[in-house]
Image (tube, rainbow, N blue to C red):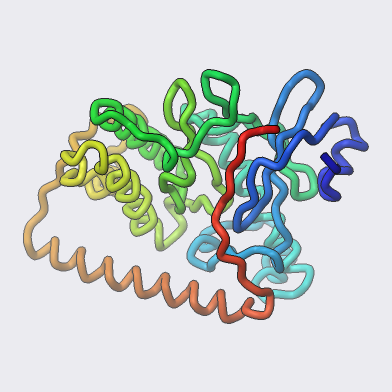
Length: 296
Protein backbone atom coordinates (compact mmCIF):
# COMPACT_ATOMS: atom_id res chain seq x y z
CA UNK A 1 0.00 0.00 0.00
CA UNK A 2 0.98 3.64 -0.30
CA UNK A 3 3.25 4.75 2.52
CA UNK A 4 1.48 7.22 4.85
CA UNK A 5 3.14 10.62 4.99
CA UNK A 6 3.91 10.35 8.71
CA UNK A 7 5.65 6.98 8.27
CA UNK A 8 7.76 8.02 5.26
CA UNK A 9 10.58 9.49 7.42
CA UNK A 10 10.92 6.10 9.18
CA UNK A 11 11.23 4.42 5.77
CA UNK A 12 13.83 6.98 4.72
CA UNK A 13 15.82 6.29 7.89
CA UNK A 14 15.65 2.50 7.43
CA UNK A 15 13.49 1.87 10.49
CA UNK A 16 10.60 0.58 8.38
CA UNK A 17 10.97 -1.34 5.12
CA UNK A 18 7.35 -1.69 4.05
CA UNK A 19 3.81 -0.74 5.08
CA UNK A 20 1.63 -3.76 4.35
CA UNK A 21 -1.84 -2.63 5.51
CA UNK A 22 -3.83 -0.40 7.83
CA UNK A 23 -4.86 -2.25 10.96
CA UNK A 24 -7.27 0.24 12.51
CA UNK A 25 -8.26 3.87 12.74
CA UNK A 26 -9.37 5.18 16.11
CA UNK A 27 -10.16 8.38 17.95
CA UNK A 28 -6.54 9.22 18.71
CA UNK A 29 -4.41 7.30 16.22
CA UNK A 30 -4.20 5.08 13.16
CA UNK A 31 -2.28 1.81 13.35
CA UNK A 32 -0.50 0.18 10.42
CA UNK A 33 1.14 -3.20 9.97
CA UNK A 34 4.74 -2.68 8.87
CA UNK A 35 7.73 -4.84 8.00
CA UNK A 36 11.03 -4.04 9.71
CA UNK A 37 13.60 -6.34 8.12
CA UNK A 38 12.26 -9.86 8.68
CA UNK A 39 9.99 -8.79 11.54
CA UNK A 40 6.37 -7.71 11.30
CA UNK A 41 5.47 -4.91 13.70
CA UNK A 42 2.86 -2.21 13.99
CA UNK A 43 3.23 1.55 13.72
CA UNK A 44 0.85 3.72 15.74
CA UNK A 45 0.52 7.11 14.09
CA UNK A 46 -0.90 9.67 16.50
CA UNK A 47 -3.42 11.95 14.84
CA UNK A 48 -3.04 15.69 14.86
CA UNK A 49 -5.02 17.23 17.71
CA UNK A 50 -7.45 18.83 15.25
CA UNK A 51 -8.34 15.37 13.91
CA UNK A 52 -8.89 13.65 17.24
CA UNK A 53 -12.09 13.26 19.20
CA UNK A 54 -10.32 12.38 22.46
CA UNK A 55 -8.89 15.70 23.60
CA UNK A 56 -6.55 14.75 26.42
CA UNK A 57 -9.04 15.78 29.09
CA UNK A 58 -7.65 17.76 32.01
CA UNK A 59 -8.58 14.90 34.35
CA UNK A 60 -5.94 12.73 32.66
CA UNK A 61 -3.27 15.42 32.38
CA UNK A 62 -3.44 16.24 36.08
CA UNK A 63 -0.25 15.27 37.88
CA UNK A 64 1.93 14.94 34.79
CA UNK A 65 5.13 16.83 35.42
CA UNK A 66 7.40 18.62 32.96
CA UNK A 67 10.94 19.31 34.18
CA UNK A 68 11.52 22.28 31.87
CA UNK A 69 9.84 25.30 33.53
CA UNK A 70 9.51 27.20 30.23
CA UNK A 71 7.63 24.28 28.69
CA UNK A 72 5.43 23.96 31.75
CA UNK A 73 4.46 27.66 31.64
CA UNK A 74 3.74 27.48 27.92
CA UNK A 75 1.56 24.41 28.42
CA UNK A 76 -0.41 26.19 31.14
CA UNK A 77 -0.96 29.25 28.92
CA UNK A 78 -2.05 27.13 25.95
CA UNK A 79 0.25 28.89 23.46
CA UNK A 80 1.14 27.28 20.15
CA UNK A 81 4.47 26.16 21.58
CA UNK A 82 2.70 24.96 24.70
CA UNK A 83 0.21 22.87 22.72
CA UNK A 84 3.08 21.33 20.78
CA UNK A 85 4.85 20.45 24.02
CA UNK A 86 1.64 19.04 25.50
CA UNK A 87 1.30 16.87 22.42
CA UNK A 88 4.80 15.46 22.92
CA UNK A 89 4.12 14.79 26.60
CA UNK A 90 0.91 12.97 25.63
CA UNK A 91 2.69 10.75 23.11
CA UNK A 92 5.71 10.06 25.29
CA UNK A 93 3.41 9.06 28.17
CA UNK A 94 2.44 5.91 26.27
CA UNK A 95 6.03 5.00 25.41
CA UNK A 96 7.15 5.53 29.00
CA UNK A 97 4.19 3.50 30.31
CA UNK A 98 4.91 0.59 27.96
CA UNK A 99 8.53 0.34 29.10
CA UNK A 100 7.61 0.73 32.76
CA UNK A 101 4.80 -1.83 32.70
CA UNK A 102 6.78 -4.40 30.73
CA UNK A 103 9.48 -4.14 33.40
CA UNK A 104 6.79 -4.60 36.07
CA UNK A 105 5.58 -7.86 34.54
CA UNK A 106 2.44 -6.54 32.82
CA UNK A 107 1.78 -7.94 29.36
CA UNK A 108 1.83 -5.01 26.93
CA UNK A 109 3.17 -4.69 23.37
CA UNK A 110 6.94 -4.32 23.37
CA UNK A 111 7.86 -0.78 22.25
CA UNK A 112 10.69 -0.05 19.83
CA UNK A 113 10.66 3.74 20.13
CA UNK A 114 8.58 6.78 19.21
CA UNK A 115 9.72 8.86 16.25
CA UNK A 116 7.99 12.20 15.54
CA UNK A 117 4.59 10.97 16.60
CA UNK A 118 4.93 7.42 15.28
CA UNK A 119 5.22 4.63 17.85
CA UNK A 120 6.81 1.40 16.64
CA UNK A 121 5.83 -1.62 18.69
CA UNK A 122 5.26 -5.35 18.74
CA UNK A 123 2.33 -6.73 16.73
CA UNK A 124 0.27 -9.02 18.97
CA UNK A 125 -0.94 -12.09 17.05
CA UNK A 126 -2.98 -15.21 17.77
CA UNK A 127 -1.70 -18.80 17.58
CA UNK A 128 -2.20 -18.82 13.79
CA UNK A 129 -0.25 -15.63 13.20
CA UNK A 130 -3.23 -13.37 12.56
CA UNK A 131 -3.74 -10.10 14.39
CA UNK A 132 -4.98 -10.91 17.89
CA UNK A 133 -8.65 -10.03 18.50
CA UNK A 134 -9.85 -7.54 21.05
CA UNK A 135 -11.38 -8.94 24.22
CA UNK A 136 -14.72 -7.58 23.04
CA UNK A 137 -14.62 -9.89 20.03
CA UNK A 138 -14.12 -13.21 21.81
CA UNK A 139 -16.49 -15.58 23.61
CA UNK A 140 -15.03 -17.00 26.82
CA UNK A 141 -16.05 -20.13 28.78
CA UNK A 142 -16.91 -19.36 32.44
CA UNK A 143 -13.76 -21.03 33.82
CA UNK A 144 -11.56 -19.10 31.39
CA UNK A 145 -13.34 -15.85 32.21
CA UNK A 146 -12.58 -16.31 35.91
CA UNK A 147 -8.95 -17.17 35.18
CA UNK A 148 -8.42 -14.24 32.81
CA UNK A 149 -10.15 -11.86 35.21
CA UNK A 150 -7.70 -12.89 37.91
CA UNK A 151 -4.85 -12.26 35.49
CA UNK A 152 -6.20 -8.80 34.74
CA UNK A 153 -6.55 -7.97 38.44
CA UNK A 154 -2.94 -9.02 38.86
CA UNK A 155 -1.94 -6.67 36.05
CA UNK A 156 -3.91 -3.81 37.59
CA UNK A 157 -2.09 -4.38 40.89
CA UNK A 158 1.32 -4.47 39.19
CA UNK A 159 0.46 -1.29 37.30
CA UNK A 160 -0.56 0.44 40.52
CA UNK A 161 2.60 -0.73 42.27
CA UNK A 162 4.53 0.79 39.35
CA UNK A 163 2.69 4.06 40.00
CA UNK A 164 0.29 3.95 37.05
CA UNK A 165 -3.42 3.58 36.36
CA UNK A 166 -4.54 2.83 32.81
CA UNK A 167 -7.41 5.30 32.99
CA UNK A 168 -9.36 3.89 30.04
CA UNK A 169 -9.24 0.15 30.58
CA UNK A 170 -12.07 -1.81 28.96
CA UNK A 171 -12.71 -4.79 26.71
CA UNK A 172 -11.79 -2.53 23.78
CA UNK A 173 -8.25 -1.92 25.11
CA UNK A 174 -7.30 -5.54 25.73
CA UNK A 175 -6.10 -7.99 23.10
CA UNK A 176 -6.21 -11.76 23.54
CA UNK A 177 -3.48 -14.03 22.18
CA UNK A 178 -2.73 -17.69 22.89
CA UNK A 179 -1.19 -16.79 26.25
CA UNK A 180 -4.02 -14.59 27.49
CA UNK A 181 -4.85 -10.86 27.75
CA UNK A 182 -2.52 -8.08 26.60
CA UNK A 183 -3.19 -4.47 27.64
CA UNK A 184 -2.95 -1.77 24.95
CA UNK A 185 -3.60 1.98 24.49
CA UNK A 186 -1.85 3.84 27.28
CA UNK A 187 -1.40 7.50 26.29
CA UNK A 188 -3.90 8.54 28.96
CA UNK A 189 -2.23 6.55 31.77
CA UNK A 190 -2.28 8.58 34.98
CA UNK A 191 0.11 8.95 37.89
CA UNK A 192 -1.54 7.11 40.79
CA UNK A 193 0.11 9.28 43.43
CA UNK A 194 -0.21 12.71 41.78
CA UNK A 195 -3.62 12.61 40.10
CA UNK A 196 -6.60 13.54 42.29
CA UNK A 197 -8.86 11.40 40.09
CA UNK A 198 -6.76 8.27 40.60
CA UNK A 199 -9.18 6.38 42.85
CA UNK A 200 -12.14 7.08 40.60
CA UNK A 201 -10.25 6.04 37.46
CA UNK A 202 -8.91 2.87 39.06
CA UNK A 203 -12.42 1.89 40.15
CA UNK A 204 -13.75 2.49 36.64
CA UNK A 205 -10.97 0.38 35.09
CA UNK A 206 -11.52 -2.50 37.51
CA UNK A 207 -15.30 -2.38 37.32
CA UNK A 208 -15.17 -2.35 33.52
CA UNK A 209 -13.24 -5.62 33.67
CA UNK A 210 -15.58 -7.03 36.30
CA UNK A 211 -18.66 -6.22 34.24
CA UNK A 212 -17.22 -7.65 31.03
CA UNK A 213 -15.95 -10.94 32.42
CA UNK A 214 -19.09 -11.12 34.57
CA UNK A 215 -21.12 -11.69 31.42
CA UNK A 216 -19.52 -15.13 31.22
CA UNK A 217 -19.04 -15.77 34.95
CA UNK A 218 -21.84 -13.97 36.87
CA UNK A 219 -20.22 -14.67 40.24
CA UNK A 220 -17.64 -11.97 39.38
CA UNK A 221 -20.32 -9.28 39.41
CA UNK A 222 -20.48 -9.24 43.21
CA UNK A 223 -16.73 -8.81 43.72
CA UNK A 224 -15.23 -5.63 45.21
CA UNK A 225 -11.69 -5.68 43.84
CA UNK A 226 -11.63 -1.91 43.25
CA UNK A 227 -12.24 -1.08 46.92
CA UNK A 228 -9.96 -3.88 48.14
CA UNK A 229 -7.05 -2.86 45.94
CA UNK A 230 -7.34 0.86 46.65
CA UNK A 231 -7.57 0.26 50.41
CA UNK A 232 -4.35 -1.77 50.31
CA UNK A 233 -2.69 0.91 48.17
CA UNK A 234 -3.68 3.73 50.52
CA UNK A 235 -2.31 1.81 53.52
CA UNK A 236 0.95 1.14 51.71
CA UNK A 237 0.31 -2.61 51.91
CA UNK A 238 -0.18 -3.30 48.20
CA UNK A 239 2.53 -5.50 46.65
CA UNK A 240 2.85 -6.87 43.10
CA UNK A 241 2.10 -10.34 44.46
CA UNK A 242 -0.59 -9.35 46.98
CA UNK A 243 -3.24 -12.04 47.37
CA UNK A 244 -6.68 -10.64 46.63
CA UNK A 245 -10.06 -11.95 47.73
CA UNK A 246 -12.45 -9.69 45.85
CA UNK A 247 -14.17 -8.96 49.16
CA UNK A 248 -14.38 -5.70 51.06
CA UNK A 249 -16.31 -4.77 54.19
CA UNK A 250 -16.98 -1.21 55.29
CA UNK A 251 -19.23 0.47 57.85
CA UNK A 252 -22.55 1.79 56.55
CA UNK A 253 -21.56 5.36 57.39
CA UNK A 254 -18.32 5.05 55.49
CA UNK A 255 -20.14 3.48 52.59
CA UNK A 256 -22.51 6.47 52.41
CA UNK A 257 -19.62 8.93 52.47
CA UNK A 258 -17.84 6.94 49.79
CA UNK A 259 -20.94 7.01 47.62
CA UNK A 260 -21.25 10.79 47.99
CA UNK A 261 -17.57 11.35 47.19
CA UNK A 262 -17.89 9.09 44.16
CA UNK A 263 -20.72 11.26 42.85
CA UNK A 264 -18.72 14.43 43.51
CA UNK A 265 -15.71 13.01 41.66
CA UNK A 266 -17.86 11.95 38.73
CA UNK A 267 -19.43 15.42 38.50
CA UNK A 268 -16.02 17.10 38.72
CA UNK A 269 -14.55 14.98 35.95
CA UNK A 270 -17.61 15.51 33.77
CA UNK A 271 -17.20 19.27 34.21
CA UNK A 272 -13.49 19.14 33.41
CA UNK A 273 -14.19 17.19 30.24
CA UNK A 274 -17.04 19.57 29.29
CA UNK A 275 -14.70 22.55 29.59
CA UNK A 276 -12.07 20.71 27.55
CA UNK A 277 -14.55 19.98 24.79
CA UNK A 278 -15.85 23.56 24.80
CA UNK A 279 -12.32 24.95 24.55
CA UNK A 280 -11.50 22.80 21.55
CA UNK A 281 -14.94 22.75 19.91
CA UNK A 282 -13.56 24.46 16.83
CA UNK A 283 -11.33 21.45 16.16
CA UNK A 284 -14.30 19.22 15.27
CA UNK A 285 -15.32 15.85 16.68
CA UNK A 286 -15.27 12.37 15.17
CA UNK A 287 -17.00 9.76 17.33
CA UNK A 288 -16.22 6.79 15.08
CA UNK A 289 -15.13 3.63 16.86
CA UNK A 290 -12.13 1.46 16.12
CA UNK A 291 -12.32 -0.64 12.99
CA UNK A 292 -10.09 -3.68 13.21
CA UNK A 293 -9.10 -5.77 10.23
CA UNK A 294 -6.83 -8.70 9.58
CA UNK A 295 -3.63 -7.99 7.63
CA UNK A 296 -4.00 -8.21 3.90
